[in-house]
Length: 89
Image 1 (tube, rainbow, N blue to C red):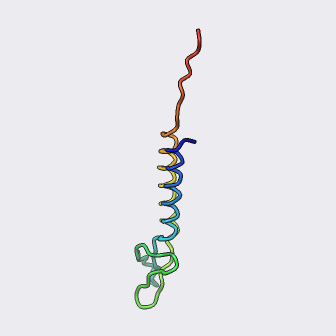
Image 2 (cartoon, rainbow, N blue to C red):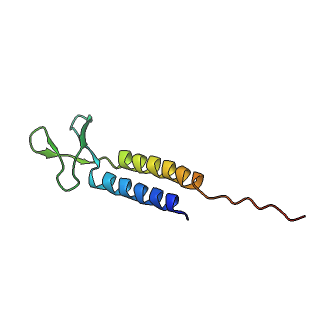
Image 3 (cartoon, rainbow, N blue to C red):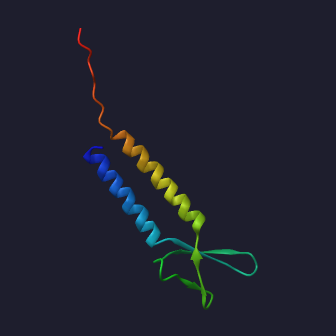
């Protein structure tokens, strides 16, 4: 692993951690409607419609994680050092 790959891994880990600390929230209404509440700090969920607290939208969070891990993985493998070996005659 070279220094560029190490920086990519650190950046991806930092972004995934930030996504965990500030996840997307939503709330399910009694009539079946799902209301998006946006992003907030994990330990201070947003409230809506009086005192109803939002819950983490796990599906969206996992989709975001999957996206950043896929992009980070592609960038990681693109940055690999390739050595050209020329056979001796």
